[in-house]
Length: 479
Image (cartoon, rainbow, N blue to C red; front, side, top):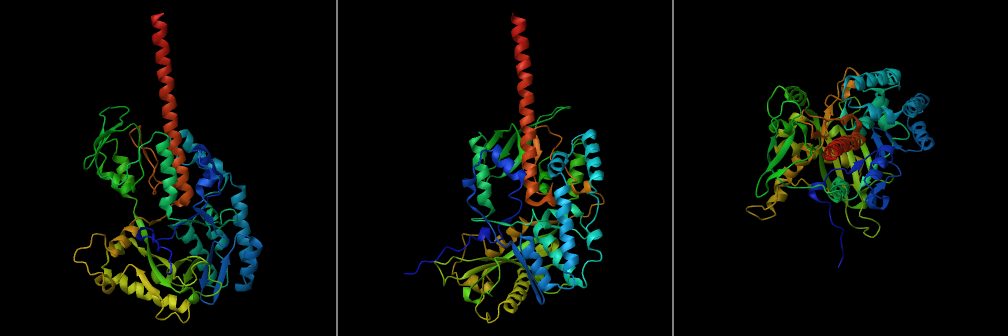
């Protein structure tokens, strides 16, 4: 009897790709939490991170600059010198910038720190826009689309004219890395959550937060406890880290003069797009030779990079031991945030368009390419259940999209990229929501986690010193 590899879980039908895992920041966090390298064997570095497929062009974006330049010379012979110069500028900008100092200065907490941050921005010319390098780059729209597609794919943000720093974070030589997380990003989170429990922290999943109780103090108010649904009841709270979407926080903070500024900042943060992911299956024999595990497929370079015009294809090969097992092709695309409420029929029509794009990419695949997620009306009716005990595919499809927002970044100054701090008016309540440092991608999430840990550590040390001084004073009084 033939044995097949298990298909990807419906929860994980989205590309499990991350960048910057070789940065000093990430290694620093692993060291602080005593996480050994062998614990991260769920991560695989891709030799060719991705390729970009344009009409009449296909480029493998290699980390090796010489190999990458040979791709550029083959596809864009007229513009190769200008493109090489552009990438050299990105490399130089990245290597000359003191990233450790920048990470230290981000999210200043007082006027002195803000002044130092502004001085650093001025000294390193961080207010420069990428248009200074790309304005006259390329003989046609292909070059601009080639660059824009990469920045949008790797940064997970949207900006018409990003700052140079934002572009170097994804296109410079040291940053042009892509990692695949086996088992989904949830597997990577699990490693960190296990460490939290080892350090006497409490991790509670699948609980309903009903309210947050606060101490009523004029000067330094604190979070007192959390009220959870079901049988959990009320639990005391020494420190609270809000890691959910920032918009939901408005339900749990009181409307006071103290919180008014925070609420106003939260209300300004809205996703511009959502990342939607669907999945097809096809026999490996129909996959074109040379197609990489990650590909950006662009149909019309002059049109906006959304919908079926801009697709990220992620291929999951079962492996050489299963030569006849279908390859899973996860296709991700962007849609404007308001379209997430469109009826299912609109999405099914779009998915049929995407299927036709894949047929053009993979000749002779007509009739062989099968949509496996989300299932159509006809496929669902075959399940033969009057009342399904599980969520329907379309519900999971929309949930996955809501968990993958893309924020528009329209900042006048570099410092405006960080509109909200990780601090709240409550001294033991910190924010680590993904919206706080979205322009830094996964590195921003690591940095935010590290800064939050340091804040709590400082609070603990301060409390210990205060307690030690108080104890010492009592002992002297007794003597």
